Image (cartoon, rainbow, N blue to C red; front, top):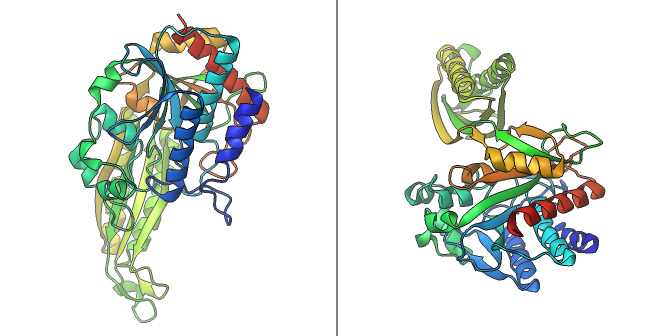
Amino acid sequence: MTSGFEEMWAELLPVGRSASSGGYRRFAWNSADAECRAWFEQQARDRGLAYELDRNGNQWAWLGDPHGQGAIVTGSHLDSVPDGGAFDGPLGVVSSFAALDELRDRGAEFGRPLAIVNFGDEEGARFGVACIGSRLSAGVLSQEAAYELRDADGVRLPDAMERAGYDPTAIGADDDRLSRIGAFVELHVEQGRYLTEERPVGVASAIWPHGRWRFDFHGEANHAGTTRIEDRRDPMLTYANTVLAARKKAKQAGALATFGKVAVEPNGTNAIASLVRGWLDSRAADERTLTALVAEIEQAAAERGGRDGVRVELTRESYTPVVDFDGPLRDRLAKLLDAPVLPTGAGHDAGILASAVPTAMLFVRNPTGVSHSPAEHAERADCLAGVSALADVLEDLACQ
């Protein structure tokens, strides 16, 4: 098991890695994504598993009847945020194959079908919506809405899929598949620093409600060297003030608000911008707090825009309500593993599927507390502890 995990990890490590930043650029339907997908398929075939690609481009590796009832499914994703770390997503997929290997070494006898899945475009780095593969499968994202998604170069999602050799005409809700799943358990690197030295593995209790909002600040393009300060309608000022307001109001609310992406037009050093687009990621412990926080940020932007002569538009691009993982399943796993239970502010495919399938999550300790960065890390011993914990869970659920 140990050598298998490390061999798989070493194979994936260079795929999509930037030589300049050390981070990963595995975006949906690009060449690095294709390499990751080929790796997944090969891992499935090497183990004699039935490989399957579903209607939304998600990859499945089956032990047992893919059409049987009550299947136990595990896995995660292989894509990344821009210059992300090595562990977010891939740790869950690699650990799933390694856990299956461990169970076979134990001589486990499976009473239910078992599947390992790689959900496509979980991070939403290319098309701006997180968990596209699982959202489509769960019917949370419609085909019509998916067809409207475009990347920064104006490429439509279905066109990107088609160029990568996939059929976009079939995407949509996959109710029949989900109805055959008895439980989905996703292992993930911890995103934060809450697990102690004595506890390398934890169980998730819930996911905070979260979403992405696009702020469009419309001003007036002009010359940076000839336009008087009092004559300017500079959207960058309104944007900057909104960033500061978001931080202040989030802190007051005990919530989170982050402007991590910005686009400027015409984007010239000596030009006052005509348009600034800023994307807000916001999360809170409950939906009421989150709704109020975003409204306060919007109000602050509009008030500042009024003083700057800038028009502000707000568009909600995605939203996930609070997710409470299946209580009996969560408690069962926490007792089985003698593991602490902790919430998370990050979204996951498990959270999307929770409305249709009993879901649970395992977290592997991250000593840096850093995620979505090349500094993201988990120690080798903790990764292997995660594999063994996942194997214990799968044996408990699938070998009855």
